[in-house]
Image 1 (tube, helix red, strand yellow):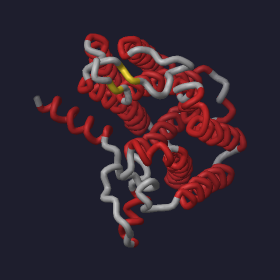
Image 2: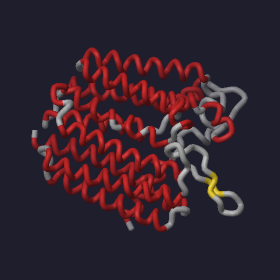
Image 3: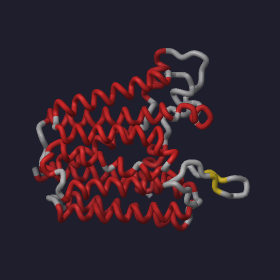
Image 4: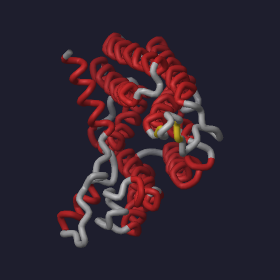
Length: 319
């Protein structure tokens, strides 16, 4: 019961759309506008990018770099993630007038121009810090990541589908690895990390796809954004969620013999991996149940965060 309560509270946090239910006013105070900026993104997802990049970075050298280098890396990834997330809100500003009128831009709390400017500033800060603190390889990978993530929000998501995101998500791990070990970027382990990111994001984004399915009065699904040039049924989407999380879990286990990771990583990744597969199986059995969809999506979010933290703790233990 206690674990179920923990997972339920986590699910609520991950599903929370910060800012979507803010009061719409004719005029906004400075405090109102500051709240508008703070609620542009979901904090859990902004902080997952530095975590994922950091896990790849420390794994590349099997130790932690200096405190200054850690701070530079976290800020670089944070600025990049923040810029990509608020650019997504900028792109969605017209749709949100109907879907989420309480969000910061459609509600008039903040202007679309200031959000676009904020995106540019975050991108520039991230690239400058990367150039100064790391190396050319990391800079190029980061630049590719920023360009492709922006293309995803502005074009690829609606024209190709949600599954155009996973190959972009994996870039986070390559950038993290290259930050401290650019000379080994074309060895096996960083690409296993890349495909862990790809398969995890594919599973997560297909669960997200299911979250946004609505049903008409006859119980027929109403699907907006495609998955990958097509719109699979809820049942088909649930099988994809299960397939991709099995792949991600398998690759995560493969990291153990490939690296210096031990029981500190193996135990939590096995536990959360099996639990994620269990939630995906339940989803397959009842793919039209919104509660099942929400729990599967939230559990997959937990999977990636626990995996990254487990790597960090394991490397801290052995270094």
